[in-house]
Every structure is written in C-alpha cells, then in structure tokens.
Image (cartoon, helix red, strand yellow):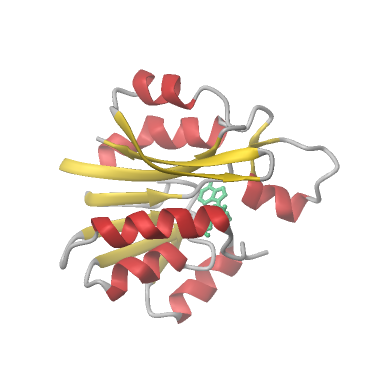
Length: 172
Ligand SMILES: C[S@@+](CC[C@H](N)C(=O)[O-])C[C@H]1O[C@@H](n2cnc3c(N)ncnc32)[C@H](O)[C@@H]1O
C-alpha cells in the first residue's frame, strides 16, 4: 500500500519547499508516494529516496528519483544536508489491517520507529545538516527522544486536525 498524501504530507511539504536550495543533498526516508522527494527535486536538490516497502520503491523510481529499499538507514550510504521523514507515528490499534499499519503505526506506543530513526540519523548528516520530521500530538515523548539523541528542535509548523495536532520539527 502506498500512502496517499494527507494533511501530514502537505504540512511537511510546505516546510520542505522553504528549506531546499539548489544542489543540496537530500535523503527522503519513508518516501511513500514520493511527495517530499519530488518537491525537493523540482527545486534543484540531489535527492535519494528510500522506503521499506518495495511497492513505493518501484513507484518512486519510475518518477525519476533514485530510490532504495531500506529499513530506515540500513542500505543508505553517504551524508546529507537535509533528511526528511514523515514516519508512521501513531500508537498501535490492533483492529487496523497490517498493510495500513506499516504506513501509520510507529509501534505499540507510536514512537518506536521515530526512536530508531533518531538513533541512526547523525551518521548520515553533514556537519551543518538538518532534519525535518512531522508527527502527531498522539506520538509520545518526542522531545525527550530528540534530546536523548543529542539533537535540538524547533517547532516550525503545526496544524490541528480532528482529535490531534500535527507538528513539524526542524532538528539540528
Ligand atoms: C506516513 S507515510 C509517509 C509517506 C510520504 N513520505 C508522505 O509524506 O506522504 C510513512 C512511510 O514510511 C514507510 N516506512 C515505514 N517503516 C519504515 C522503515 N522502517 N524504513 C523505511 N520506511 C518505512 C512506509 O512504507 C510509508 O511509505
């Protein structure tokens, strides 16, 4: 299942548009439909995309973006000016079908994939590299995870939807 861009995708995309400069080296993890990768490429960045789901990899490769199948950084080499990640960030709901869980569920608590991402990300950032993430007010302990992994955060955007708030952080 390829995640159809939704409010979280568009909120993040707006920030991606602001951050990209020509020739920037950009990594889009969990690329899904490729929305963030395409936005960065259109603005002149050098983009590599990755997703754990082979269906997304095939789809985004066809859009002309080099895309790898990778569990987070598993198959990634190199260092980047910007890493973008719209992770699965919701707590597990056992009634949800498995294919949809892969795109929405971050683990039992909801922050487990984000935690693994933050633990690995530093090795793939250039010295002044930045990260853009989006998550929900339902995702627990994000500030704590960010700090444990020695990043600093700035909230650069948020949007209220139904019963939750979506939040975009810039991490340095
Ligand atoms: C919420 S969707 C975001 C898709 C797209 N980037 C966007 O902004 O609309 C999350 C994506 O992360 C991918 N994903 C889930 N676990 C992953 C992992 N461990 N490593 C890489 N990608 C993963 C899913 O397959 C899905 O495409």
